[in-house]
Length: 199
Image 1 (cartoon, rainbow, N blue to C red):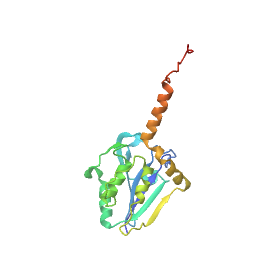
Image 2: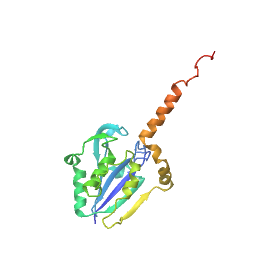
Image 3: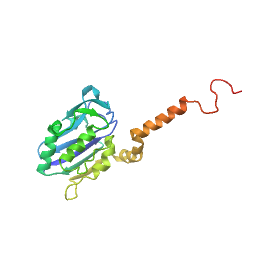
Image 4: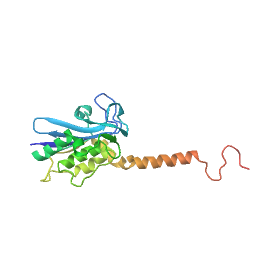
């Protein structure tokens, strides 16, 4: 029986070479009973962690990311397997651009588009910027009969803590907070004279 597995690694996850992942990663695994194939997308080579860069399609994410924050395996039909495999082998043929954009054309977008080709993303959901923020949506994907082959596996306490901290990780919240702090530190407050005593 073919299966698809959604894999998500969080920011800071140790890669096979010992370095930390800058942004985390989301990729898809397909298994046909004998062979496991890995399909992912990210910045090419030396551009790891860059938000805008030439992209590359990867077939070795299972080895590159030995630790995962989340994975969910789902039983699929042979036709779903073939549709996702075909997309994974030739994404450009299906209109997926090869230039990496962390906000509009990332590993997350690639994974959701691949699931869409297999009929597992009928709403055309494009994903959240941070890979780990896609866990809740991935949890909603089930087999046609409503059951998973192997339910979602999460990393213990860290996953629960992340659910509380996740809203703070949104890039726009961080930018607003940093902007407010910079403004407060660099601009003098009304009525306060900086550098000399008030008369």
